[in-house]
Length: 280
Image (spheres, rainbow, N blue to C red):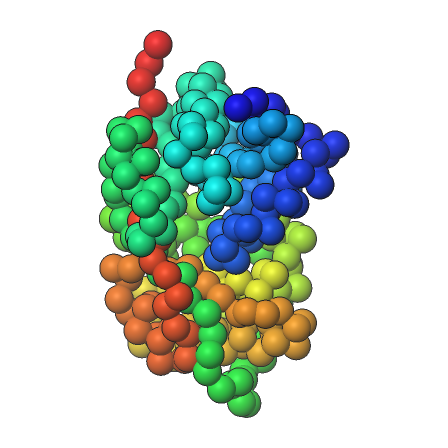
């Protein structure tokens, strides 16, 4: 088994592996490879690409997410463990304290994670939309760059309780250049609600994924989140995204129940495992 760093010369090999990745993971992996191509690795067996790994490891963070995918016919041959070793080494060099990986709850990969010393932290539902297209959806203001700091502050405050339960880092969304760049690219797919000039609610639907749905605590229970999600569904359908999907923490019951009432159905559950990086 040979492992090499990914670069654009190997995009065709990556595509061959991605063709076998479940849709719920393919979007996440593709986005990581697009954003952090220097963090990608490919495993080869007899010259054929059989597995890949990617992460969002960057200096200054204490936690990083990663994915490892091995073609089914090449599992249990050490490819996954070898790729994980590359991610682990890179994380240690960058000062990362914890690595986190999402694994399908029905997958045998849980045993692999446990053998590597990873511990389950929380679960997340991958849901796709199967309901009727909402009618008479409200019109919301589109996000623009002048709202950046206000948007990040409002979202960070709204999500703080969930992020504390899951141990996500950072606990609050930070106004980093990467976050600003992403929101700038996706601004046509993000909607906001403002009160007295300040952002109090928002939601996005970039590339068919409904995400970042938040409402300030003092305005909840008024149907704002429902209306925002309905607007996102319509927006995704107009852009011909299929499926319309989202990910939600399993124990965030108000959000899970809202999405189910709108016609979202859980396709699978992902368990998130954490590995602490030991000092040399």
